[in-house]
Length: 391
Image (tube, rainbow, N blue to C red; front, side, top):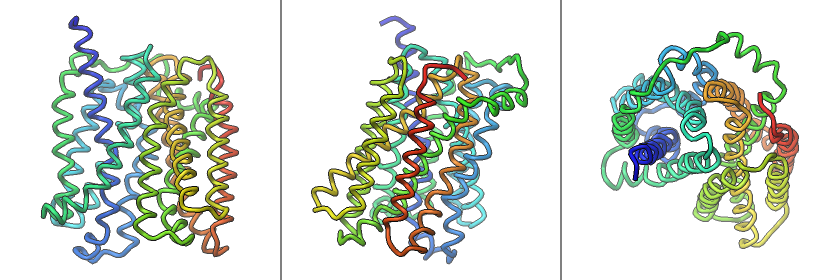
C-alpha cells in the first residue's frame, strides 16, 4: 500500500471519528432528564433549553462557518470546532447550572461548525467518492446518536458516574479525536476567495437551487425530529406499552442508519437524483398513512421500519445534495452553511407545532396529516434539488 493510500484510509478513519462526536452530547441528555431535574430542581422549560440551545447554535453558526474557513482554513476550523466541542462537553461535568447551560451552548457551536465542514472536507479530499463517503459519515451520526441514548442511564446509574460525568465523559472522546485530527493541519491553508462572504451569501440567497436544497434539508429534519419527539406518544395511545413504544422508536433510528448509508452510495453516480427522491417520499407518505389507520403490531413494525429507512435516506440525500450541487470545497462549505442554518431553523418548529395541533384537535390524525403535507413539500424541493446542476 502506497503512502498516499495509507493517508487516505487514515483520513477516512478520522472522518468517522469526527462523525461519531457530532450527536452524543445532544442525544445523551434525553434519558437523563429525570435525574437532572431531581438533582438541580430546574423546571421543564429550563430543561428544554438543553436541547434547544444546540439547535439555536446550529441555526446561527452554520451560516457563519465560511467566515472561519476564510481566516483559518477548513482543517483549522475543524480543529477549532473539536476544541470548543471538547471544552463545552467537559464544562457540563462542573457542578453548577451556569456551566451546564454555558457548556451546552458552546458544544452546540462546535457541532454546528463540524456539521457544515464535513461535506466540504469530503468534497475536497474525496471528489470521486462523494456518495460512499457521505453514506459512511452520515450513518455514523445515526450510530453514535443511538449508542449515546442507550448507554446514558447505564453509565449514570449502573456505573455510578452520575449524570454530570455521563454528559461530560464524551469530552474525552472529542479530545482524542482532536489529537488524531491535528496532523491534517499540515495541509491547512486559509481559503482565498474571489468573492467576499457577504457577496457569496447574497448570491446563494438569490439561487433557487440553493433554496431548494436548504428547504429539503429543513423538511427532512422537521419530520425526523418531530417523530423522534412524538412517535412513542402516538404508539402508546394506540395501545402499545411504553417499553415496546421505545423499542419501535429505536427500530426507526436503527433502520434509518441503513437508509442513510445505502442511499447516497446508490444514487451519487446517477446524473439525476429526482427518481430517488420520488420513491423515498412516496414510501414515507405510505408509512405515515400506516400510522393513522389501525394495524396489528407486526404491521406497525413494518411501517415504522419503512419510515425509518425513508427518513435516513432523506438525510443522506440532503447531505449528498450539498456535495453534488456545489463545484468545489469552498462552495460546498457555503451551501452547507446556508442549508443547515435554514434547515435547522425550519426543523425547530416541527415538534412544537405538531404538539400544538394535537392539543387543538385531541387526536393524532391532523398532526400526521401535517407531516403528510410536509412530505409533499419535500417532494417538490427534492425534485428541484435532484436536478443535475450547480449552485
